Length: 340
Image (cartoon, rainbow, N blue to C red; front, side, top):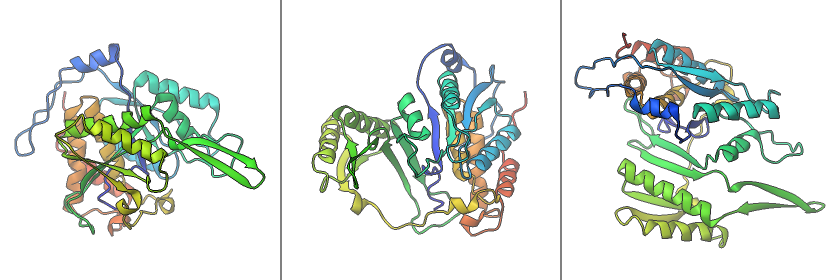
């Protein structure tokens, strides 16, 4: 659905790893002007005094094609970002513990990364946790944040959507703890802890406070998993008491879900037909995190203009344009190219 502009199944959002050090002191002190409002003139910012290194892991599926789209747009917009690219895949035989360590070292050094989906093989090969899970745990990337936002210019069954899904992704069903107790009987453990339940709840309420949102809803299955999800709900309720200005409610997952069409990304691999909107908007979010507001707004605004104009639409939007057509349309809609 076009409404899912930042689709979690395609993009694990730019991993903004917090920390301190010389690079972040430099980032905080760089003299960059903020982009003016859309209705007024914009003045290109002063030249950035550094080029920021960002770890890039294209992943599997259409990830490599969409990362190429990002690089093309960044080049056209003169974005001061240099990508340190790693090809890591468990299904394309491009995996090793050594390569994983290289990726992790790069992410820790650069502190910012763009990563596509690394598919995990379905068959068991002696280890339960795949590379995707290992990266999350090693870097403690506990919160997956997906912004579902309708874009003007394309109508869907549900318009004017603006919601954020925040998911804990290091425990629960992601515990990766399974064993065969007796032949033919498999036990799969779902681990829920008070510490991580309170942490994700606090993250959600802090996010709502910072972004000016009025309600947080805890989605659960406590009607069946009474102890595990019951503890999660208890922690959410406890944290909610600390945020009296934000409305809190909970809902069973069955009632929360609705039928929806899922874009068949697997059928788009290698065919130059995937929609790069989500990846480009995620890249713009990353630039915002780097305090490159001018470039962030320039890229995001160009993507939104292409959608609103409705002249270039990929197949998922009912058109016949290719990924390359969409990228070129975005490049053509960049408001300003910085001149130094």
